[in-house]
Length: 380
Image 1 (cartoon, rainbow, N blue to C red):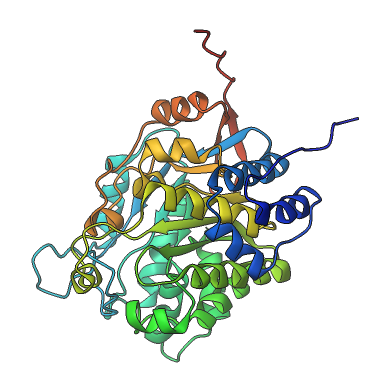
Image 2: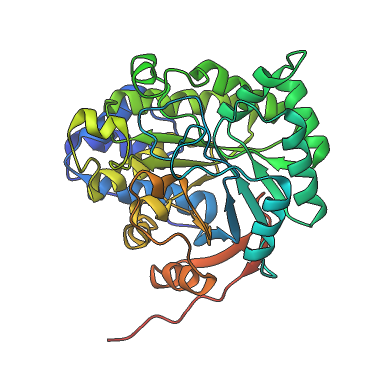
């Protein structure tokens, strides 16, 4: 028999929560508030890691991925974004399909599996352009994980007659789309959403896009942009809305908290701050996510936004996926991310192994492609 898990909390307020989680029971909103406010972060991290081990063992996943942002032209005007441009502005780009094929060929390598597409809301591109883009990449042998719920909502606005979410997603799936990324969620709380993403799809619309995708057999990811003007309670509300949808559909593969990048955007200038989240805030946010989102398979530590070094630490605080090689990331870097734009497989494998985990190269749908041997422990 396996010995029962034992974890002693230093904060008495955490003791009943620890017992509940170890017994496999779900925590409430108020109990999530306790996780966010307790000074005993080490216990929260250990509890999150217990949940991780229960779900995925010692495996940590990554993917060979190319980020494709075919345009930065966007009319939405989110205040946190440094990526968007208007027609004719300095730094604008807008790829024709031939440009996309050349870009992908430039970054191709034999293990490249996933093309991850997220870009601006272009007011003039017809929907057929996006269908041709997915079809062309699929025919070249790539898995296409493309367009956030906000972009799916945009596609319904540019079609004539106007198409529904189901119709748009069905046509994209027929063209070869295999999954949706999780962007565009930001924070669901209406008070915050009006301030940071007033013209973007509503929270209800975002959830409905993902619900519809799941019903059509398209798995998706989910994100949360944190560290700006939201409260800790807003973060928990966001997580619990995702948890409820996952109870309903089971279609989320991973949850990715995205730390706000405080450069080159109106929101950072308005708040007059140069730094927002700290390493401990990032670590706690991931750990709380792992505990609260008990029905989502993976919590992802997005090294682009929190650095590879902190991502390595999060592998002991509930994280089981570190995204991937990524290559030419542009959106986060446009708003101030200071990390490299990509990492090699060797760098990712070493990062995972040095943290005592087993690296697994996956595809866009979490099919395991290669399991790397565990490195022997160093003896001092």
